[in-house]
Length: 525
Image 1 (cartoon, rainbow, N blue to C red):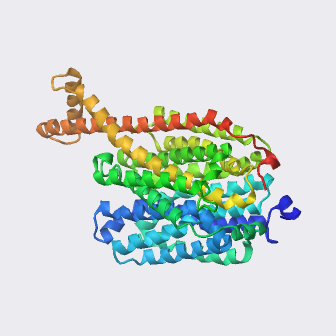
Image 2 (image 1 turned 60 degrees about the vertical axis):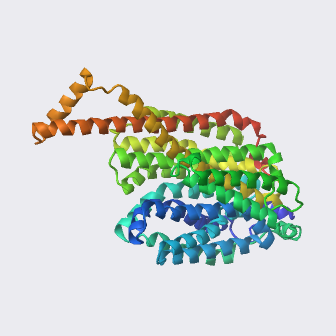
Image 3 (image 1 turned 180 degrees about the horizontal axis):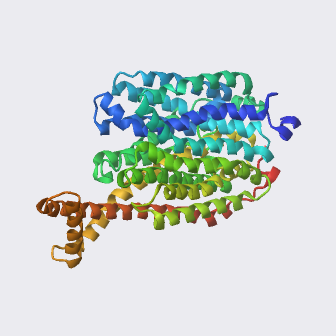
């Protein structure tokens, strides 16, 4: 490898920031697509004449194929050439987006979302590997900051944008908007992205296709995604279907690790986990995904169900948090080259944990819009100090030819963390709501003076609003029950936030299991 690349990174003669902007464009589009469809599901169900439950396969199908491609993307990029693989992914994603937009029925839409997920799964890891090669180690933090903006901002604005498009146009436009972005990305990538010399050597050493490894990881991750996505809906292990998929996933993934560990040219280089810093970085990225996506589902849901916000308004409450991240990430990118990355991560998880604990004292049905914005903004300060330093530690000390493998595994950790976080939050809220409702109901007895006084107060209010005495008395019981359910659900949401806070706090001491990373010593070649 040339001294020129060691000092400046491999850019193929192009400005490295042009390369960074080019690859970030498609990745932002792909990450946006994972969240933009959520709020459109009722419209898709109605337009295609299917049930709400059936329409969720539009999300599940994408997540399953996306998860399968993520870990093997590094091997595919090495085997077929990273630029060629990246452009193929953009082309598949863009073409399938158009076809999703014109899908005539649910079956066609689900199949095309599988294809779209396969294309989208290779974009994030390829971009990270391209950035790692384009920028020298001492400038890698700023490059990862740009990627971090896409990763954090896209899920924040996805529900808002999806709600706006669906309300003002049609759900089909959530797919059509990908087309111009994909075309521009392909044109720019053709001109400015170049594979570095070390990839040619890695390609020669790639070996034959490991069909056993590919099959095991496809079955294992596909089954795991179905378990996480459908578990709560099917009541988890009460369902024989979920139990069967969980067993299949566990057996396939264990067999995959054992098989790949013994392969000379593995599909996923699981031996990277022998590096303590890399293994710890992936665990921290998993927890970051749990906290980020878990809270991103929890807060809008609470605002819509108990505060009466529309999907667009709930998204607007989250969006300023994304702006906080955008403002802080360039600072974090600079600090990574000057400060031990472990201290930045410890600070980030400490702030994230404090913000989540703060929400447990602040969240209640009567909070105003400004308070909701500030809660998310506080949390976003911690998020901004995590993504770039964790990525920096993941690549530290590993040879450049491993960049493709590192990026695939790190992105899988973040995505699986998101899936686990969403499954965890939805399940915990459902279970703890039942628990708190039963506990609260124990104190609500017909002869209780407190209950009678509460019913009388509600009835008087209803009478002042125009109801007759008889109607007001009946309606008061219904209103009291709604208040009990609301209190029970609020306590369940607080339980979820409390546990997410402890998950984040547990990462602070764990950071120091990694090696010190600072400045130009952050990467090995």
